[in-house]
Length: 215
Ligand code: SF4
Image (tube, rainbow, N blue to C red):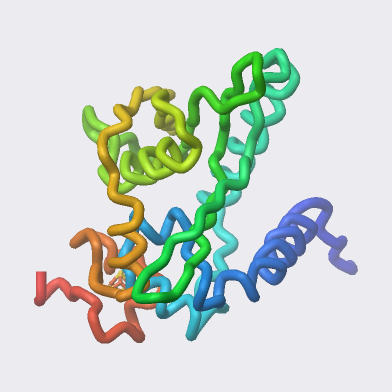
């Protein structure tokens, strides 16, 4: 019997592949730094530029995350009184060593006030487990960077797992965005957190990878 073509999965794969291909030029640009780069190992950005295709992943956990983000965006746009926007592009120019970099990101959810100014930002994180008691450091850093770039003093981290849904308020704090960009483009935070190498798609090629023996 001839097998039937897939109904949904193949389409999902093509969509993710197309989205990845559309971002390829930007993600390998020397001038572009992503907000997520500021909260992760600086050498990942270098490896991404050399081996961009190694970063393509089509996995259930990522698909689930994507679906939660899109579902939340749709619920808030239908019920949020027109005050919520999702995937809000955020951009800033930062000069390091005489070169101007474009810092780019997309805030998951932004709440606007009556005058149309941003009032609060929410980053949504999905996964199997919730961090114990407190939000994860790199997630906090990411929200703080968005708070600074959007000029808001209300920020939140929303964790969604199969067991729990928890929202943490985030204090603005004094985050040094320029310093983080400098560390990133000079590649001096490799890795930024000890645990990163374990989950890194470039670890088999990376000269700075922390192995179990080196930790
Ligand atoms: S293996 Fe570790 S040091 Fe190398 S790019 Fe990945 S996270 Fe950074």
